[in-house]
Amino acid sequence: MADSDAGPMLRRYDTLVKMMFLGDSGVGKTCLMSSYAGQPVSDSHISTIGIDFKMHTVDIDGHIARIQMWDTAGQERFHTLCTQYYRRAEGVMLVFDITNEESFRNVRMWLQSVEDHAPQDVCQVLIGNKSDLDGNRRVRKTDASALAEEFGITYFETSAKLTTNNNMSEAMELLIRQILEKKGVFNDEANKDEHTASIRLDENPASTQSTQSSYCSC
Ligand code: GTP
Image (cartoon, rainbow, N blue to C red; front, side, top):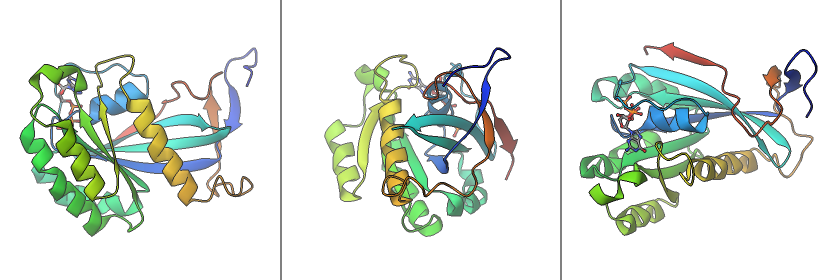
């Protein structure tokens, strides 16, 4: 994909993917999204109010997927309000903090909430975040893997603070692939998303493309 002299060229995306980030307050949902989108990761905890979103574009085997990442507030007072967004989700990144046992205990509550409010066939991945703080670990990897297995989902340990080997791209790619497979994208390349639209892409579609974010106090 080449740039024109005037700057980034226009290119269409093939599929729109809607993904929710869920988990307790402070586990690192916003930071993970920023890290994945190649944006600066904040050192301070500024709680999300209501719901926010970022867009990011990736190339999966030549298929351009535009990822709509919904960042929900982990604070309990927003739970009921935010569940109304679950019904639009095709994928869920369920995040806990490996240094915070309570955030792991609450994973079952989040899974129940997904079951209650999201589409039945929603794809999910369990994320144990803050792997850079392994010395302060309070959740055993084996316990998290066992929980993930119980629910038939894959477990990843990630870090929003590490710039390399942070596992976030791997986790996102797995989830995106699962969603695209469910949509039949790899069975029938002609089956393009009806929401196809023109967007601006830089030279490398797999690199940071996040140009849009919004805020909504639900
Ligand atoms: P809410 O918006 O309240 O739901 O929180 P959140 O889950 O979006 O958490 P946020 O991304 O704001 O991160 C909370 C705090 O954890 C911040 O101080 C981050 O800098 C820190 N943090 C996030 N991810 C990591 C990580 O991978 N490693 C370390 N060491 N700190 C992290």
